[in-house]
Length: 151
Image 1: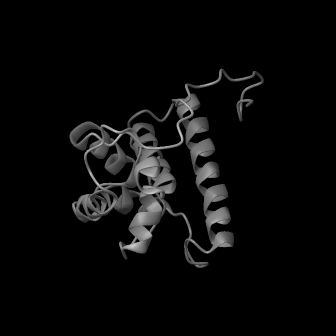
Image 2: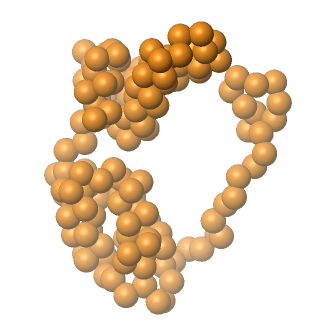
Image 3: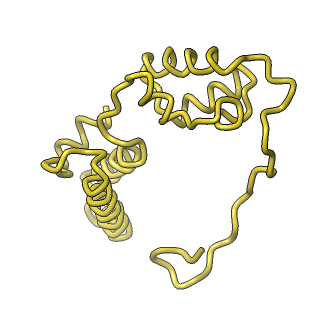
């Protein structure tokens, strides 16, 4: 895949091996994994962090192979409320970090450009999520909203 803002092709990333079923050494059952996901989401972890925690602490290499569903799908089925998707919140945290850096270093032009690119990406994603019905239609990205959401 080509890079979005550079005139060069990107290197391909690493890929997981093509495995169709969960390994035999996974000790947790499907319902135990689902209850762990609900418990970990109650502590305030994002879905990617939940997957890492399950992999590192509980020995579940891939939630989708073990349960047949993704972490986000399990959270939705169990009634865990997700206000804003994780990719948008991480971009908002990045934008807040860039804004605080810009306040301290106003002459940093490359940072100013990267802030514009990140905010543009947030707006594009929010347009997509509004169209898909994931976030409300009246949701709008604002700097103050990003600062509150990043904390």
